[in-house]
Amino acid sequence: MKRIWRTSPGLLLTLYLVLEVITLAYAGTIGETFNSGRGIKLWFDTVGAAQNNGGIVGLALVGFVWRVWRGGWISRIILLLFSGLAVVMTGLALIMTGSLYFLGLLAFCCAEFTLLCSPALRSKVV
Image 1 (tube, helix red, strand yellow):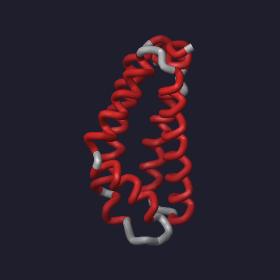
Image 2 (tube, rainbow, N blue to C red):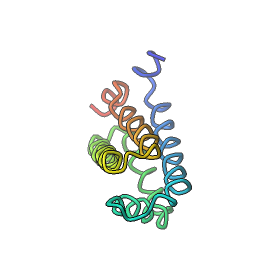
Image 3 (cartoon, rainbow, N blue to C red):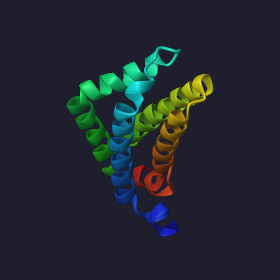
């Protein structure tokens, strides 16, 4: 695992895309029941917009990941910012509701953010 973490950016970027698809599926299936308007409506509106425009968002995400693979540091910064924003929004929703659903979503978001911070990707875009 240590070798993959340090030397396999392609595998890590593929895992990032898989985790993103799983996160959207998790938010779209289980998350629909939690959209009760208890101060977390913004999160579900954001996820809903991403799912309604899934083709555009998916193509943009794949494009940014491809640019990171090709050495684009700006694309990596954009992905880091959006992943970090997802971690913050999910953490705030977890604090406001105390729901186990948001704990699972936070785990997915943190895993994505961690993959983007890996040494293999840092050395790929330098």
